[in-house]
Image 1 (cartoon, rainbow, N blue to C red):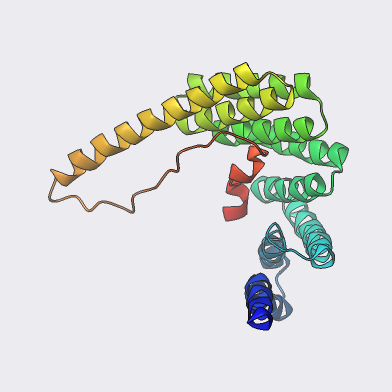
Image 2 (tube, helix red, strand yellow):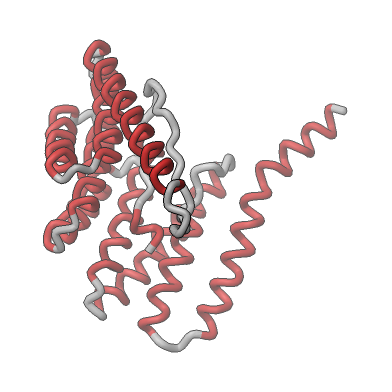
Length: 250
């Protein structure tokens, strides 16, 4: 029985790696068949995105290999995107690089690439992306114990979220405030930030329910897939894992 359990645990830990390897093999085969450099950039990015899925890998050696490969393929994609002046592709690469460097506790590098990503978003007046990069910058600075600088980034992110009526980002900002204040030993402020996040989440659910009811009363309207939201919990670990980079989806 004990031997069976060990085999089961091993299988569950390696299934994801095997699945990723299958995707990677397909992408790499396609890359070998592609001669157009502009198309290669997208394939490099997709391969890098596969290697970025290292968070759940248990083996330190395998995780390090995935991180290094993510860096290598991202750099290849960045070279091509830069040559073709594809700013969105370049921004995606900057976000990928910052994720790996944060995981490796290379905070200076992570901050630098996030600042470049933030600049591109500001130049394009892409407010959601600006907010997202500010939150990530705050996370890097919190990891490096630069709490005052992190709070400054969160303050700007909150201002942009409220000004542009983006409540989903407001929730995320308050979750990060909670994490920040708890790291600083200011638990009361952390609790207040968590309460605000919970309250905003409740309002979002109420608005969503009202919209669903209204759509149900319109028989000629075909409702798209309904997004789901999870109730935020009291933060004990970094909320960076809650971030879903839009760049990854590009």
